Length: 176
Image (cartoon, rainbow, N blue to C red; front, side, top):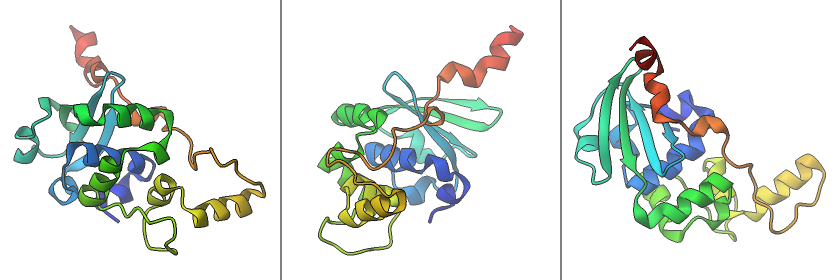
C-alpha cells in the first residue's frame, strides 16, 4: 500500500483513475501527492507538498499554484479518457476502458484480477473494476442478498472526490 493510500483511504479510487489517465507512475509522485480531485469540467487537480519537475513537464499540465496547503497542479483529462471520466463520475467502474484498466495497473500499481482467477492481493477497487465473482459472492453473503447482474459493486464517487478550483482561493478572493 502506498503512502498516499494510507493517508487518504477514501480517495483511493480517484488516485488509481487519475494516475492511469495521466500515465503518471505512482513512485514518481507518491512521496509528494497529498490528495487529488476531478473537477466538474474535465480537469484533474493534484495537491502536493513539493513541486516535482515531472508534473511541470507533463503533456496535460495546464498550470500550478502555490497555495496554503502546498502546491496545486491542474491538468486536462486526456481526450482518450473523456468517456472514462464520465463513466467514473457515474460509478460505472466495470465499464472503464481496457486502456485505462491497463494504465491503472501499470502506473498506479492496481492489480485487476481476471474473472477466473482466485483471490490475489489487490486493492478492493481492482475487484470492483473486474466485477470479480469472488467479490460479488462476498458482498452477497455479507448483505444477505442476490445482486442483479448489471449492478456495479460500489457506489459512485462521493463529492469529496471533486473540487472547484476557485474554492482553493476563496480566502484570498474574499480579502480583495
